[in-house]
Image 1: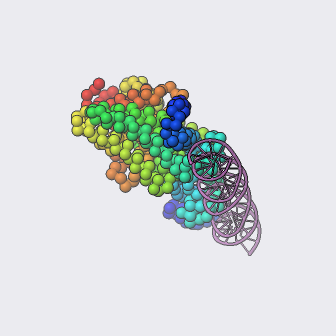
Image 2: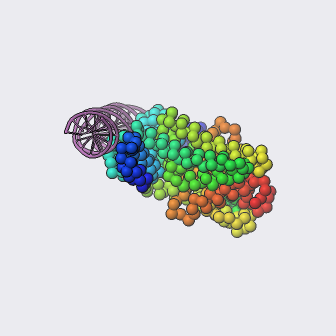
Image 3: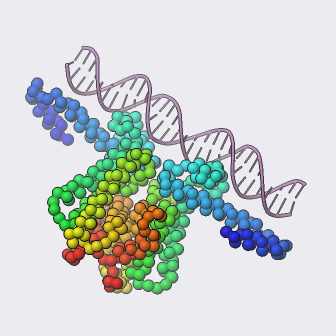
Length: 220
Length: 220
DNA sequence: TCTTTGTATTACCGGTCGGTAACTTATCGA
DNA sequence: TCGATAAGTTACCGACCGGTAATACAAAGA
């Protein structure tokens, strides 16, 4: 927020020494802020009313602009939704990379992923992944989004299988077990309410233990 | 199928003694068959393309009729969807009543319900419950549908709590546990394919044990 | 045989929505 | 100060879709 102002002030003091790129950057940053605002409003409306029943006029109205102005930031309505999906997947992947950063058993990693994914499911962009139907997208865009979903799913399977290999998890049907786990967590995106009884972290902690309860080799 | 023909033949033999209601009934039955055909085609398309992206023209086309003909059987597109939901819920409730018919422990009943609900999730009308978004409905219709969903959900909770009372299930957070179970099963409706590796029954049997594995008091 | 009833058709309407063209305005660099 | 660029605006277009007459037609009942 005040970072921009600070930089502008510093640049003014430096006079001619200031980089000519500054204003461009500032402008780009402003643009990104607005782009982000569009996405936040859009995803909120998509969750509230559904994608097809949310018109771009409504999105624009909540931002105090008009529909055509949106086309300064996005090429189409579909691109807006694809970006929403992407942001949700980005959140999930960020957590996965954090988990991969330090060595752990498959069980510990799986539990960490469950905890993290639960929190993603309490965010609008995360809920978008499971509450907005793929089918509204064109075939190529849908393939792209599904590729991202598969990528995340793969880590659930990887952690589970590596847990079976390192002995921290009992042998089981990987496919079916991962479906059960991801199904349970995805469902969080449907019933979670920010004003509910449980915080995102509490849900994550509970599910991390409960969903792996019958899988863990040593009882903690 | 041949029941109609049999009855018609019998009525013809009885001549004048035949009830004048026969043709009415036959006509009503034909009507119901056609109504059912509309619903089967409609739900299939809703799952394939989404509700909003499925036009009544498409539905009619697949039935080799025209759009206005649909209005002989339904008052609106919304009514079609509501009926699809209702049929799915009916399937679920039928199983619940069968479970309630004979006395059992909470655990046994919960497992039976999991098995049954898994099978419902492999049917089009069952999948409709979890894959077609509520939001496309008007407020009153949505309330009606959600009431039905809540009813089913309640039996999951009832069986779990009664299991805790009769000692067949360990104490746990009912709300969260049921969410985990129903989430996992609902997810079946998203990934199940009729041409897949597992049959509906196999999935049900596996999940019935796996999802209650950490809840059961006595290990079987 | 005449009439009625239900089922289907063709033609059409009103409204909405995504997207575009043309124009205005403000900001920044030179 | 002037020109270029970006970000808005108003006005509009074409397409589609749910739903509704108005009508044709076949079958059943009297």
